[in-house]
Amino acid sequence: MKLGELLDARRLIVPLKARNVRDATTQLAQTLVRAGAIADEARLKELLKSEWPEDIVSVSGRAFLPHFRTDAARELSLAIGVSPVPLCLADDPNRCARVVVLIIAPTAEASGYLRAMAAAAQALASDEVLDGLHRAAGPAEVLALPGLAETAVPSEVTVGDVMTTNVTHVTPEMTLREAAQVMLRRDVSAAPVTGPSGEVMGVLTDQHLMRYLLPQTVSQLSTGQMRAIKRRAKGTGGGVVEPGNVAVREVMDRTVLCLSEDQTIADVAAIMLSKETDRFPVTRDGALVGFLTRGDIVRKLLGT
Image (cartoon, rainbow, N blue to C red; front, side):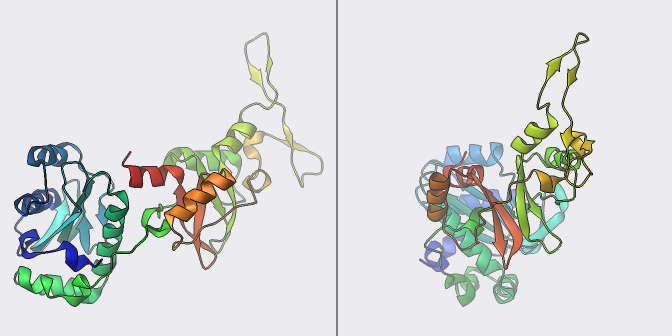
């Protein structure tokens, strides 16, 4: 399948006159209603009002890709609007772009939905396509853009389509207390441990933090205080250190299975089951570029 197969003149608004990205999304949704791609218009309207996606995709300041999976949709559909002026997110006036691409799919179309998003993002990353959209005077000129219409929709959902790219990571020299503060601040349960060149050296999890920061041996004193046995640290001449001052490198998992961006989610699911692992760093040329968890897959593919 190619992106051109998901487009027709009825699903294009050029020029698009909207106040912001949300207004543009509402107008694009109406084109899908008029094109017969929506089975339940009232349900879609309610969705647009109440469930605006927090993770709206922005293609490097070039375009916005609002996206929804809902049983109000009859089929995987795509609509494009090109504004004469930049449109911004209502809650972030610093994030603006002239192009808005709306992708809507039935709840069961998880794979096709993600693949269409990946194809649209790939097309919009092209300077030629972006310039063509900005110059277009009407829908016919958009449909005639070969770099857009001919972009292939990938046949498989890959790690790169689903992974988190804004990765929380820690260094091996950090103390457990410092690493815990980083992980709590970012609300993550695991963090890759990276070296100076971004290479993955291990993984630190909330289980490590609980094992070492909570008392290993607890005794109830008459005062009701809890006391933990101190840990003998490496390289201290036999001395002991408080658990919070132990270096990350001493407790992290050193055996780490890393993924590449082009691996399919089907392959990763099989690895998760066979290895009983639910989180993976993603690397490119040996350096960390993303992180994938079971939760990422569930949220993207199952819509939870």
